[in-house]
View (cartoon, rainbow, N blue to C red):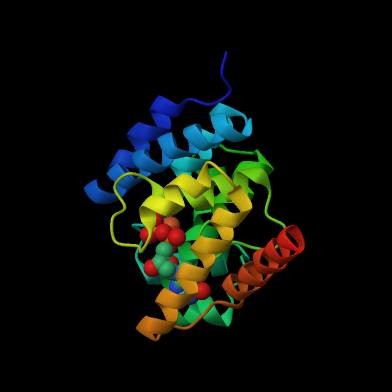
Length: 196
Ligand code: DGI
Ligand code: FE
Ligand code: FE
């Protein structure tokens, strides 16, 4: 018996997401499963995290801010400046309240899927990477290399994606969330130690 009713979650997501976001969500779900096979993580938990990672994505910004304030979820300056970032934390809250997920590993992976964080767990990394490489994604640079790297060296894949994200944000003149910077520096240090 599995603990989660994924069909039911899928049905609910279909109602709460637009069509593209739903397709992306399915891509992330199966990419999470593939990475979980490679890195020996619980397949069901990986798929639930993938399914729910963007469950708050289609909530309007004002409503996300309201939801966070009402439930005492801290909003940082970076999130106030770019409220779309809040879909990660708000998503973890909705996954718990509306989808009945109590597993802290899954909730953590949802909460940090946009910026990453230092000392990410295996599931945090699986969801973060799957979000970037799932089959519908097609605009990021070097995607084919990163897709291969994801199955070869998970930390190096994290480092490369974070580096690309920082380059992209700089190019677009978007504000960097301190958490994205912290994540990059964490994986940067890890790479140096490994290659040291
Ligand atoms: O929700 P998705 O589109 O599937 O993916 P996501 O949750 O990883 O969000 C990706 C977007 O978030 C992408 O356009 C880059 C942006 N992002 C990531 N880190 C930061 C950021 N945006 C800002 N302003 N600051 C960040 O540090
Ligand atoms: Fe997202
Ligand atoms: Fe996503």
